[in-house]
Image 1 (cartoon, rainbow, N blue to C red):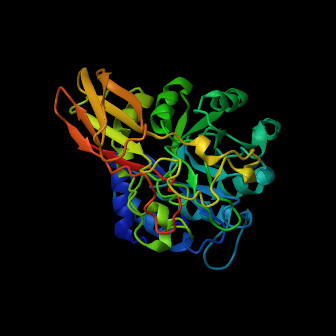
Image 2 (image 1 turned 180 degrees about the vertical axis):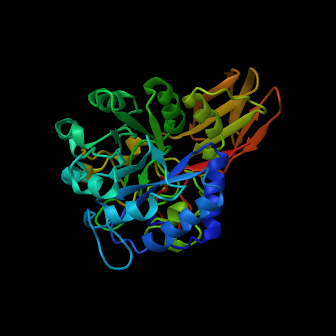
Image 3 (image 1 turned 120 degrees about the vertical axis):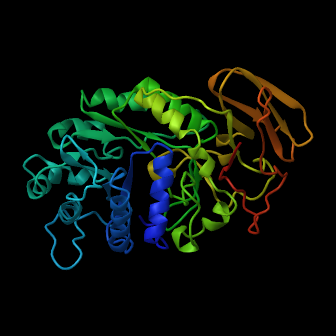
Length: 410
């Protein structure tokens, strides 16, 4: 919610309609305590959702780190009821609030030190009439969660990006899912991660590359009860799949240079297929589609890293050279009506041909020193797309290397 300063009711309506068209069921409203956007923008979000007939849902995630101080449990007095109890009680009666097992679904970002506030006999459940509580407690660890099993109904894990120069596996998903012993597991799926630096946090990169395709395939392996996409609009961490920001006021300090010209809307295009597959629902592929993403400059010699690190020291990770994290390559997914060769050519370079199968496919093509606009083609149907030009050096005025992804589709 910190990135919604310029949002109007009309903007919220558009965001919800785009998400719904992609097969998304609800928005998780992440809220840092005392954020001035919360009061007006939560009102706008619920008004927009209710106007859609409440077929699209909203739920709260209380961010215990993002607001500079933990959320007070409540009760809270005064005007706007900005405490956990006040927020839940104000909005749980809305037809747009997401209920599960007839209880308002509530999550967090961290906040493990407040776990007792959510106990069955704790202040929050008692004052709200009960909640279905699925927090994120990665920083607290599984032991804390297991020692407080009675206080939670499930866990949402933030472990959706790999550490270091590795691809993401499902080991951490099963660590949490199995450790919950039958309680709800919410799995995170994200396409990218480039934290471009704000406040006390250093800028860093975790590997994205084929992550968007890999994580959706992994939802079928893990079969979690819920999937949360991270995120719709976190421009400062470059994993947004929603529309571009409406104004600079919606982009964290220092991130604008990396976001400009890097819309990520095309990452939504395959969501109807991915979500139907996860839910076990039938899906008819009615047209050939291509989806492609990449950085528009190679890592070596393209510009200054501008202190961007590989891994996050603030998360206790060992720092590595950021250029060992990212791969110089074009990443391509194809959703095909039938078998077909799929061709990729970067600029005037050689053509790479893949044998695509009916359904979902994913490949990558290394830069190998090639520059120019990549061209993608489904040979059987002739569907063709052209991507942004890959250049040898950065074009950012600051001279910094852009570790954000450019995303396109055909």
